[in-house]
Structure formats: C-alpha cells, structure tokens
Length: 377
Image 1 (cartoon, rainbow, N blue to C red):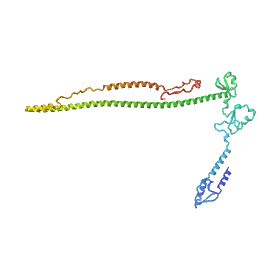
Image 2: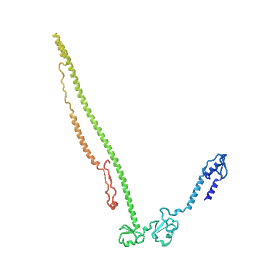
Image 3: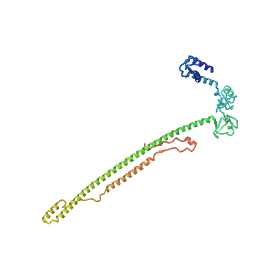
C-alpha cells in the first residue's frame, strides 16, 4: 500500500506545479527555515518560486488515496462475518465465532454459512427443519417428550409435540403450527381492515363535527342578523310612532298657544279701556263723556270674545291600545315560530353503534351508522 502511494506521489509531482503532494505542515516548515532571500524551491524538483506560492490541495491525489484506503480496509477486514451484539453464534465454529445464518430444529444447533453446507449437500439432513438463526432453540422443543414442537392445540391454546396429542391432548382440536399461524395472520388482516374502516369512520365523524360546527355558527350568525334587523325594524317603527305623537302634540300646543296669545291680547286691550274709562269718569263735561264712552265701547273687543272649545284632557289612548295589541300579536307569532324552531334544532342526531360486549361482537360489529344532518341543509 505504501509503495503504491509513493509511486502515485512521484508520478503526480513530475513537472511540479506545486500541488500539495507533500504534507502541508512539513513544506511550510521547510520554507520557514529557508525564508531569508524570499526565494522558495520545491523539495523534490528544486524549481524556485518568487514570491512564496499559495499551497492548494491536490484533489485528484486525495481521491485516489481515499479509494485505496477503503479497498484495503474492505479486503483486510472480514469482521462482518463474525458475531456482534444481538447476533447468534455458530455452534460449530472454534475460536472466534462466526454469525449463524440458520438454525436446525432437529439438530438443535445453529450454523454459519460454511458449516451449514452439509445440510444442503448431504441426503442425511434432507428431513431436517431449518429456520432463521435463533438463540432460543430449546424453547422449540417439548420439555416433557424432548420432541420438536410443531402442533397447536386449539382446545387448550398451547403449543405441543406429536406425542402430546396421544396423551394429555388426546381428542383435542389440534392443527399444525403453520396452519394456525396462517389463520391467525388472516385474522390479523381482518383486524387491520377493521382498524382501517374505523379510522375512515373517525375521519368521517371528524368531518361531520366540523360541518356541524360550521353550519351551527352560520345559523347563529343568521339568527343574530335576523334579530338585529327585527330590532332595527321595531326601533324604526317606534321612531315613526313617536314622530306621529310629537307632530300631533306640536299641532295641539300650537293651537293652544295661539288662543292663549289672543286671550292675553284681549285682556290687555280691556285693561287699557278700563283705565281710559276710569280717567274719563273724572270729566265734568257730560257731552264729552258720552261721546268718548261710545267710541271706547265701539272698539274691537267690546262685543265679547269669539267662542272656542279647548280639550283639557288630551289623550293618546288609541295609540296605546294599538301598540298593546301589536305587542301581543308579535309575542304570539314569536312563540309559535320558536315552537317550530326547537324541534328542528333537536333533529340533528349522530347515530352510533353500541359498544361490543365480546370479541365475537367486536369482529361482527357493523361500521358506524350514517350521520344525519337534517338541519341547515
């Protein structure tokens, strides 16, 4: 290996471009010792460089060396043939044990690749049963009869040898271990299918829950919107009724105020005439008194005030009665409609199967029933 590497270094270093075919630390040390005149030379071909060149890695040489190292390690290391943690040892290897590749239930021993050859080449081993390398071979032998366990007793649910079927398990329901395993694996497949079916139903139920939540929220939003619009409509009607009352109030108050102003004006005129008549009563000229008195009496207001009627008990009882009747009708309609809404909301049902009470019930239980969503559809 060293000779090959030395030969490669010599070939690559010819016609030196000073690719790093030397140890970088060594060549830098060599140049540091001779760094006097600023002239540097290659340790092999003596080619000089000015200024000091920048060293670079020879990638081609590095790859060749790396491949050679890997090849040498693989050729020199047969450790993959020997046992490691968790491996089964060959019972026929001496010294360092090789890994067993097969175990023989008849021989009750494990064999590596080389020691297993007689089982394939010799007719004497033709009826031997080989299995994957197993460390617990004794567990596959009947402790009572020292025979290979190859029968399964369904009656007692136990593993037995053929001699057991003639004594303790005589008349029991027995099959070969392979047959029982095949049936168990088929049952396992059924279980897996059931799991997949139920996982599918789980996804469907999750989607259903999401749909219920989404549609419930949509219904809540719609109900809030409708009630808000209803309240807004009622508030609008309330404003309109208030406006009607205020308009009527304004008209009646305006009429009363006009009458009040007229009466106050007439009272002021009468007081002025009374004052003038009081002053006239002090005159001694009878003719002047009569002429002035007649002119005062002929003035407006002397004939009396015009007749008018004023209702002192203004009432909006008709409005109150109409609003009271409207309130009762609205409450009656709301009650009737709410009684219709409640059973519709309660109609959302999720029908699920009952829990299985036994293993047979579990295996035969039907998938989840359909989910009904009559509301909001």
